[in-house]
Structure formats: C-alpha cells, structure tokens
Image 1 (cartoon, rainbow over the protein chains, first blue to last red):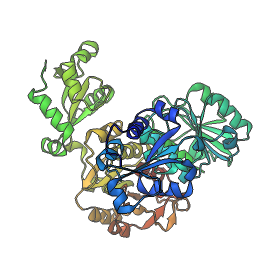
Image 2 (image 1 turned 30 degrees about the vertical axis):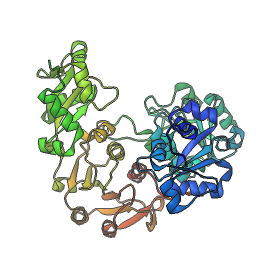
Image 3 (image 1 turned 180 degrees about the vertical axis):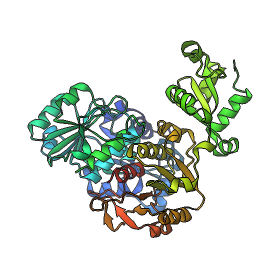
Image 4 (image 1 turned 60 degrees about the vertical axis):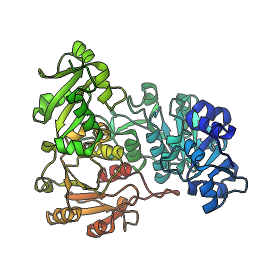
Length: 251
Length: 251
C-alpha cells in the first residue's frame, strides 16, 4: 500500500492534476469517479494506464482491475480534485482520444471552439455536444486544456465519448471543413442572420468563440453565415456554454 | 480614508460577502464592478446603500457618488470577491429587488426554479432569462441565495433587471400560477413530451429542477406537461443552466 505523499507515483499524480505541461509530457490525465472508471476499464481498456483506489474503497468494493494500486485514504484524498472524492482515480492516455483532423472532417455535425478559456464552459460544452448529437469537436490551440481536472469533471464522462482534436491552425482547419462540404455557421453578436430564422444544413460546422471577445475577425470572415441568438433586455452576451447549447440544439 | 481591515464598515462588507445570514439581517448584498455600479447609481439610486472605491480608483476615475467611501487599495481588495477587482464595490438593498408573488403572477413568461444549488448555474440562468425574455422568476426556498457573491457576479447585471422572488411554498406558488392561466411545463428526464414537438403556449411557466435529482415528484405532478430535451449518446442529463436555456429559448 502507498502510504506517503512523497511516493513517486503520488507525486506524479499531483503533477498531472496541476500542470498541462506535465500532462502533455506524460501523455496522461487523471480521471476520478467510481462509475466512469469501472466503465472505462470494461469498455475502453486501451485508455487506462493505472488505477488507484483508497484502502477503504479496496476493502468495501474490491479492485476494479487486478493491478490497481492501493493507497492510504488520506494520501489519495490529497491528489483528488473532487471535494467528495470516491476513493478511486485513474491515469488515462490522451493519445487515443485525440483524433486526426481527417477522420473528424468526415462527420456531418461539427463543432469548432475558438479559444474557450473557462474549464467549466468547455466541460459543459462537451457534455452538451454529446447530447445534441455533435460528432466531432475541433478546438483552437488557445482553448483551455481539455485534460485539465475541471474540464474532465464537468464533461461528466462525455470526454471519453465525443471525438475531438486540437487544431494547430484553426483558419486552415475551417477552410478544410468548408472544402469537405460543410456549411459553416459562426455565432456572432453582430451576426447578420437571426438563428431562429436560419434552418441549419445537415452537414454543418458551428463555431463558438472566446468568452470575452467572441469569434476573431479572421475566423468570422471564413464562415458561410454569421448567426446571432436574439437577446432581449440589456444583456450583452450569453454565457459561451449556453450559446453553444442553443445553437447545437438548433435544427 | 479607510485604512484598516478591522474598520467596522470593512468588517461588515466581509460579513456580507461571506454569509447569507448576515446579508438577510442587513437586507443588503455586495455588487462589484465599475460599469454596473455607475449604472445603478444613475438609474436605480433607490437600490444603492453605500459605494466604496479604492484610493487608486478615486484618483483616476473620481467618485461615482459624492458620499462614496475611499478605502486603501489593499483593504478594498481584501473584501472583493472578483480576482481582478476594479477597485469599486457597493452595498445594495435586497428588498426592492424581491417582488411580490402577485405582481409576478401577472406576467406571461415565468420561470420556476426548484432547489438550484450551484451559484454559477443560478447566475447563468438569470442572465439567460433576461436575454430570452423571461419576465418573472420564482425560486423555491431551497434555491441557493441569489445575493451570494458568485451568483451576483455570474448574472452579469441581469440580477438588477429580471424580476424575481423566493417562494415560501413552491407547490402553492405553482398552483397559483396555474390559476392565473399559465400552462406549466416541467423539464423532466422522464418527460412524456419531446420539447421539440411541443410548441409552448404564450402564457407559460417553465420549471427547472435541482442539478442532481431534477424536479421533485410533487412539483412534477402539478405540471400540465412534462417535457424532455432529447439527448443522444450516453449523456444522463444536461447541466441545469443549459437545460434552462434550451427551454427558455424554445418557442
């Protein structure tokens, strides 16, 4: 049993929770939660690197995998990000989750995220994307790290199911999406078309911009249509996850 | 100039930021941000109790009201909740914002919130409600305090514009709403009607439930229609603010 916070593996876990750089170097991120980890070891075994359980978890629920590492309760809590931790976490490989752009281009329903910065927003968008039937998510390199603990948590498991990738050059990516036959809709406060009066094409990409400044001009210029969500009162903009949800659920 | 964290007014501000009980006893809450406070003192003067500005703010921007209290920068930062504070906050009266149920019943477009617990969700819902044209919000007594700093911040000003109240007995309130001629729609995972196939009546109330357990059975039983938002993939539920947004923007 691992009993010290200074154990090498515990230090690695803490580093993965803390730093994007550490996650990238290791090619791993941390998943927390009983059900999602049990699901992953059953159905996505290739994703799972190591499973860690607390001593209490091990004695009450048994090991989800034979080679799970048992950790003293207080030591595991120390590296858990969730307030009410369930005594189980896993290190998961990033690489199988990061799809190729070519593969994603083939899908009909695409979401493009330009520089979403808030982890809760990104997580909620990924969760909503799965529910809305989005088949591929492209993120600009300025988008917050999808493998950071708060994003992972707020996707509520959708992170393992919605195909996504980071684009090196988002302008190039959008050009390619258009060449693949998608109509590109940009959510824009100064959009020309009221989304309510704009039926979306079946083969489509929706672009959502940064929380503060929206979609950048070069990206907006590439869109086939700039659409706005009608707003009453004195509201200046909607929350990015809310705007994304309304557009993803628009037919 | 106030120069100490132990100044009586600073201690009161800290207490208002920290505790619902303190806010209720004083009948006040704290608003932060330059533009919203300048707007409030111009257009909603009856709401504003005191304005506090940092010494830096006072010397660069002047006083938004003649009787603004000037506070040493570090002391004001100490009671600001926002990370990048703007050197200005105000204490604002709760009472003029809490409308009577009778007044709100008269409105056509009503939102009912049952036990929303997450401050960010409540704030985002209030912000979206204004944009979507909701005219009245009823909250169950188990809903998080709308005057807590995180809710106030995430409403982005809509808190001062969307009429709302807390209901002592949410079942009684919903009965009254029905008697006032509203069709009551409950967002329900086990809803009978796909919201996409259910046009909403003009005079309507939409009920959104708690993040974890949804709408309680007694509340759901009162609804005229239980509607569900169609979900693909393995998603079990949508974020409460996302579900509320999709339904508030539904025609």
